[in-house]
Length: 337
Image 1: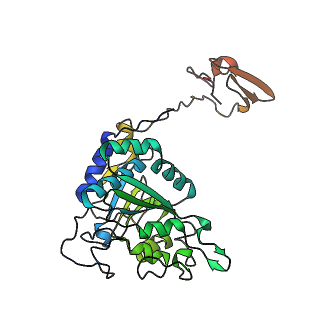
Image 2 (image 1 turned 120 degrees about the vertical axis):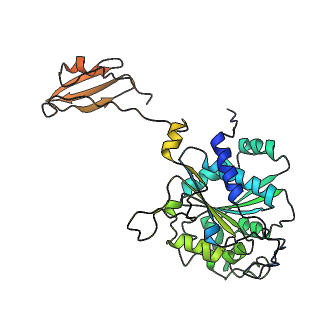
Image 3 (image 1 turned 180 degrees about the vertical axis):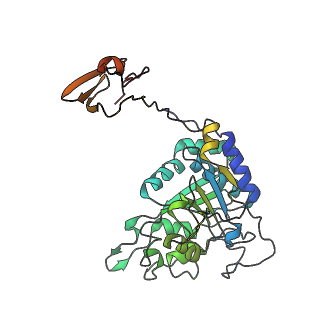
């Protein structure tokens, strides 16, 4: 089976809003606040308002409308338009991480994006649980992380994406990312893996922001140890502000997300499927209870007062039960499972 991707109108709208609100390059300063040269061959170019949370971006998209597509396409476009090539994608679970990895590395995604960016190449690096294990008395360095941090940005057509879950790496003070006992020397003067990531001046993408709240350990470590130039959060749900009595949503900007595709808009545009539910009208609901005892693709068996009723595909419940509590045409349609 061959999968062909297609960019949808709402995804294009989201991308246009992101690029429009994304800070321009900083052509004034020769180095950033951490003393890293604006022309470092290992880092993204310096952008305006780097590190200021008020300049960070939120993108709200209902589940199933293509968040992964949009942030992947965003990386291609920011590379083409701003020259940014170092991205860190942080997800809240291994399952989401595997889904993102499968998309980012898939042949169908590469073929799709090559239509718009024929000379661009996207490389994916991962941080795994066993990457920092002790071997022969020495602590190992993650090979992928070493390659990501030391990749030179003078290759304008290569996009470097470090994909990681926060679990075990960003949610603990004892994380291997924060230790300095490795034998391998990282780029320039970096002492820890986290510092090496910081020196790439990354753009951080957070998926499912309601699970990486701003007052949590994982987010704090992203902000204070990676020190990204900018964070772009993608989610269907965003957390409330800490200790908010009015349940105010915690967006970076007072104006809210730069793109807002909520559940209602997604449904009205037929971007997500709805489920129609029919409730029977019971004139005396306490007179009888029916319990499902067997279920197959062709029939379902109910039990009531020690008597069983078999309802086949196409049968009306009212006629089988001979019960006036049910009215209308409530029919068993069968199941594929």
